[in-house]
Image (cartoon, rainbow, N blue to C red):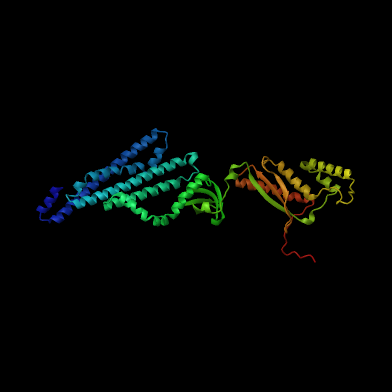
Length: 410
């Protein structure tokens, strides 16, 4: 290289111009060699990793190849070559040597960060395949590590450029702590929230959650350091700040999914004016219902025995005991639910009468379907209420319907 500079000077060029032409020529040669070394090394490493991945049953090596770990590892060879050739490259200039060394070291810091990032991404993919980690916020922890790595890389870069010890910059962080807390406020809150969410098992990936304040109602598809992504049932995506899960109201439907049934809690409203005592002829008609026959007969016998023992005057329904259409209808609904094949009989099954309302007398069905899939659950619920609504007329009951233009009684 010195020969080229001497040759240029002997041909009448100035020393300064000759030095720069020599430096440019040297740079082109060294950078070309470094590029060729990287190209050859990358192909060799990718070939070796792929061959090793095919001979093993592990999938982690496949993930390393997928996330460019061999490619980033191959960048160390050009770094080692350029680092060793720095003195030749500087062309006997101490100032140029110091700058070249700093640039080469900065390159080493950068490729180290990329190498670590590739490894962490491969580790994340591998952990998410395991059942014990599928519902854990792995992304949050990976992001925290990456933030720490990038922060350390920036400090090391400042140390290389300035020529000062790394400890000098760590002491300056204390003075900037207030600013750092302000800048990374959401990140710190998200990290703390991620730990609490994982420790208390509040939300997992795949959980169905509802957050009315954010319009989120769907499945959790991702939990990372800053946000939680919820895929709503209309296929829209809602992002919620991670730390908001600890300070906002949230409904997690996981308990329903893991239970033995999905709840039906719905009422029908009956017109109060249609409620009455039933006479013998009306009871005889109801006894024809096969699933309800034995119950009605036992209740009639129980009422008759009671009235006879009390010598009640049954010509007036208010004397003694009498059966009402709403009471029998409520019992019939429970009997129907107890014989329904898609209702879980091991959980609570009942039909209860609620307090009267301006919209009628509510009869509420409280039961659990065996099938917890939303679509199937709604089908079963609809079938049950189709039957119940159609059955009301057989008990001389009318369903309440609000008529907005109805005339007020005089």
